[in-house]
Amino acid sequence: MQRRSFLKNTLLGTGSLALATGVGATVNHLSASKGKTFNLDYAPHDGMFSTSGGKDFIDQIKYMHDLGFRSIEDNGMANRSVEQQTKIGDTLAKLGMRMGVFVVPKGGNGANTLAAKKKEHVDIFLEGCRTSVEVAKRCNAKWVTVVPGDFDKSLPIAIQTANVVEALRRGAEIVEPHGIVMVLEPLSDTPDLFLRTSTQTYEICKAVNSPSCKILYDAYHLQKNEGNLIKNLELCWDEIPYIQVGDNPGRKEPTTGEINYKNVFKFLYEKGYKGIIGMEHGISAQGKEGEERLVKAYREVDSFV
Image 1 (cartoon, rainbow, N blue to C red):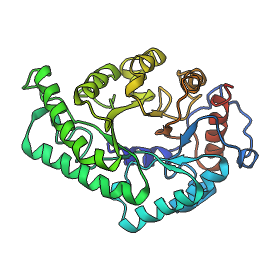
Image 2 (image 1 turned 90 degrees about the vertical axis):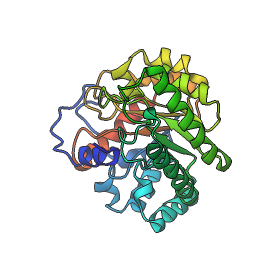
Image 3 (image 1 turned 45 degrees about the vertical axis):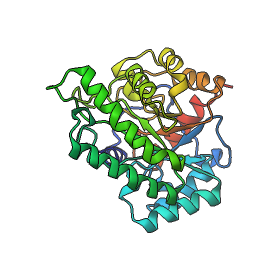
């Protein structure tokens, strides 16, 4: 399933999941948090505040700002019209907000794998990098998500790795002059995906050897694939400029699963992390109630100081 579709479908879901005990049964009104920023920079997605903020993404962005958020993410930004991209960028600039990641268009997470060293796959990826440069200029983005694709099981893993590194070096040559950073995301969606762990991604980034090829550390996926979040963050720290979150199981907001996000965020804060933390997850309830729980959850896990 494509990322944008996952988030849309999850945010519009039944909302029948039980409340996590960390959030509690009593929910404060969103207005209680308006104007107060967070200790870290969390970035909501389109649809997360569509009940309270309106269906239009621009209106939602303004509402997110009122709630204290200072960044957004939009995986499908490259699929929006030029007019929409520009309008979003202008709105963020006026509000003093940052644009988080969008996904480099290459046909899907597993598609057109760079591990195979097929010219047609690499060409699609490189064209996606060129497109992303233009999109990033319109919406003021600095980071773009790259998923190399599936394994090519006909090739030894070392050869696949070398193929991925070679393709990423060529991609970095396109985006680096524009100050854009490709962030590679290990995923847990299927066992067929080539990029699986933080340390594997670290090795690839070191081999690419470019300031424009780094790690997107998604704690939801990496909790599933490897666990030991804080230890692996520490090991790979010098290659991590970008983080995403979602609790596990369920991929909903923090406090709905097993991950102790207050400790993870405290670690990031004490490390001096100034990057964006993308809220790439669903919401545990529908409508205004779910939106209130979402803000309350982030206030809770952000209260580590």
